[in-house]
Image 1 (cartoon, helix red, strand yellow):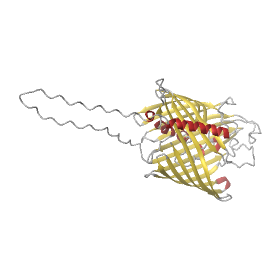
Image 2 (cartoon, rainbow, N blue to C red):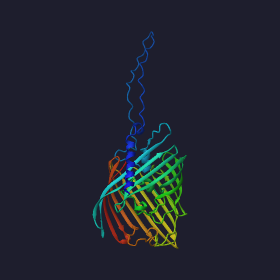
Image 3 (cartoon, helix red, strand yellow):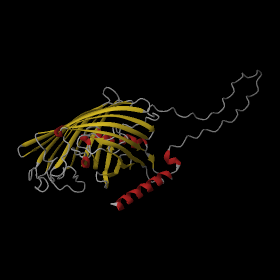
Image 4 (cartoon, helix red, strand yellow):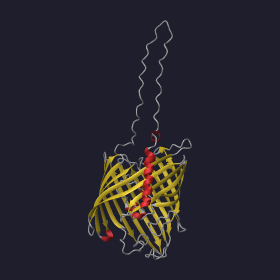
Length: 438
């Protein structure tokens, strides 16, 4: 594992050196050259009457700098999503006249510390690294784009892991697009907006509903397959977007993402539609869903329900206004598993709201997660009875404050309250995270 970390670190260092040593013309468009001063006009021809006096020519002046854009908010710059952030940092690649290409390289990370306490909880302070995320985007041609994202993260046992989070190609033409590879599933708003750029998102951590599969998540937040979509623009602000996709099915367990080969014949499909800018420019309203089949597993893998397949249906609705100064996101999910004449339904709903005043953004968040119909055998397969059960009946709340220390870094301080309903336990957490994105 240390070799893989060293290799990825060396790749990152090389890319940074490449960016730093790039010529200035690749970083910003060249300033227009001012025209040379005009030569003095020749004297007028002689005439019986003297010519009328003319105004003296105005002295040449240098071009005034362009007025700042309304979106360039000092100390409070925040892109609404990772893709727009990357596109704003894109630059031209000098290929010696061979062809046109643009690329961007972005880095996200965070460090933090806090304390957790409550009944039957060993209270102790801790410091920790949140993760390091490297995003590369490249416009390979006028219509083809490459996206690759890798993350270095630590698990609860302090073991480092390197994951290829996304790698996909997209072709776009006249509002239509076709995308192939591994991406984040286009469910709701949060999952496709922030990816692993935690500095961009309102809270320190993702809500439970959209956590990643290896972090206690319950949704298929990664997708390996083919996606097609269309975006229709109605004026400068209003747009309607719809997409459909087919991809590899869920693996034997939640954290088994089948990136190289799908070991099962059934595939997943999803669809999404969103309307943006209906009442205000940044308002998004949408619905999405997934249909799939989870293949049966032997009793050694899924002892809670051996040799039985599960049909999976996921429904979602959301509303989001990720903008300045008001930031509001609300999403709801229902996950249905059918098998062996039984049905398990897991519901989750969360909402986050914040309002920016200068460099300070106070925010509140709430979430409710509950599993009905008994214990879902896919989420709790029963492989290790001694392992702690996942938290699937929780009421949670957050009161937080974000302080933008600079254009590219912010500190978030949170108090979090989690009520584990099925265990009649309350957990209190105080945490501060220093996050950055560039």
